[in-house]
Amino acid sequence: MSVDKAMSIFGNSIFGQNAPHTPAPAQEAAPGGAGTAGKRVEKTDEQWRQELTPEEYQVLRQAGTERPYTGEYWDTHTAGVYQCRACGAELFTSNEKFDSHCGWPSFWAPLAEGNVRYIHDRTLGMERVEVRCATCDSHLGHVFEGEGYGTPTDQRYCINSVSIRLVQDEDPQVSATQAED
Image (cartoon, rainbow, N blue to C red; front, side, top):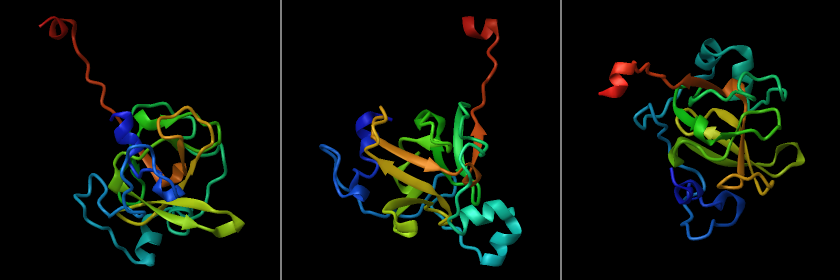
């Protein structure tokens, strides 16, 4: 993905400004996470409670937050795709993951513009932008801007580990004879 493409993911419009030379898309992305063929996943509260662990339910369905430095992926550097733990939609990749030292997995952009949606979050007396899965509307975390990280978008998607699942890239073994062909 080019830097221009990454910066145009939402053109900083959720922060009230546009990235240079990029159009400003709608504030909330349309549903359609990769891996779900654009289908929305809708379940009853009881169905979510049956399918998710209590911790997953509290974060994904009630917009909770796991404690920093306790999640499975905050310091992971494994190559792969991060999926929504609730519905399996592909949300982020290891290519956009970076070490922010905040205690949660951090990404500078989602996998694709329509895979996440944004909601202005005014809870706890703060102005933040909540990030949700566009396919099943599960809470993932928040996105912040202007913190001075050296990333192409100057944004930090601060995502709860319990909200995502890493599907590792396959590392095909190439024999010496195959490499010479």
